[in-house]
Length: 305
Image 1 (cartoon, one colour):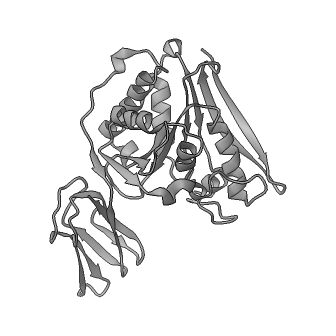
Image 2 (cartoon, one colour):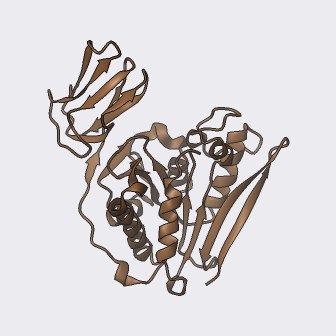
């Protein structure tokens, strides 16, 4: 089958923005998966993952259709920023977008139109810290897609599943799932996924597994068994109160209990110590910086339950 590369152009008046898209498989299939990368412009690890997935796929064994929107937020990507400097809007909070709105809202609307031509959807993001592989779904999903989305997560098998409340309805995945009733989920990669060969291979295999489950791909030799995952419904974030040296006591994936010290921050005077404790009944370290200098306001880590 032919692989097609194209640009979708967006005329913003002062400039024309191009969104690169790869299409592979049969457009007329009733099994069509859309994948978005770089919704946040500086989150580029997904491109390496998609490259590996496409290298594995034997196009003669494709039964369905895959559309990958490679750079979903091209202006933010050009400046290597999470959001476009034109309006500083988070594209993942303005869905479904607006053809007559801000720059980010207009780009979002075009991306949404590309997604809704498919009947499954995955949005790939990455954390700024080392973390567990995370899947994300909405807690309030009561539509006909809920069971399918849950099965897709079961097949993908992240380390943890985070269930978000309805305030995330204006994320791209949230709107697509709730309002358009297209099943799917969001993936959050670790900041170091693509520099960890075994972890990168694991994510790639998980995505190929999903293609097989959705009956889009038919090469069963890539049907890898995966482990169970932990469901997370509440998190606690540690933000640096001051600039200084951070020293972790835990590492990503560790179990934790109330009263455990997660790490400490040493002030620049190298004397004052701010200790960070598990002050609730949180159970798992989801993200945590290694030993590192941090600035006031930086995210240090996240624990969850």
